[in-house]
Length: 297
Image (cartoon, rainbow, N blue to C red; front, side, top):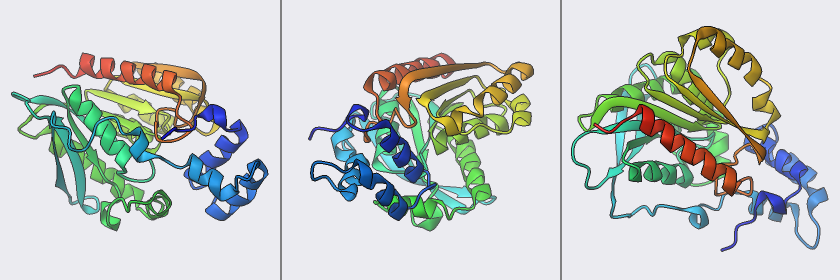
């Protein structure tokens, strides 16, 4: 199956789709506004289908890859929603303890793309863990629109506690070295920033185009940060200078990389916003960062 790239779509349409993805537009309004881009027999609904994730086509590491051991576990979260499920992957032939990476999804829960990202990290020698924030609402429903609707119903104060609980549990697992990193995308990028302000013993945090915490929280950041920002992403980029100034004032260790010509979500290889060159570079930087700060046990 051939996947369409961002170059196949008008930038205005991609920005419109980004607003839809983040809940700023409902489906009806998106279809109304997307109608002007429907040419050559393609309908607005057809455009939406073309822009929506193509999980099977983009999968990099199969679910049944013999090089990996995967499982679904439950984590108690008494201060959060009570209990949360998480997808875990690690090298099948791992000997001894492994450094851990918490993988935080976008605003649709633990979908197949994030499971694939988790397996990719496991193949690099990490104990990779991806909690599903939608657990209290039944988990990822298998449909992106429904997942987005459910996600908006979460009590985010409890969801943050769920991720804090997951971090504590997996850091203490007997197959973990006790060194924990976090990587997140979009909503998950914001969660990576949040965890960096709440976990003084966090070893490394990577944010892909995530919301930034309040500037006053920067002083609480002890982990080294790696921040990836898209070029066309006004919603996220407008807040970065203030937070960067606060990080500098706090003496925090951080590196920010901008990616020219990219859209928000450029690392997600299931959608047309995917930019292969930028994603490859950002991923290589992420792996190098984790291997520097999360050495093998």
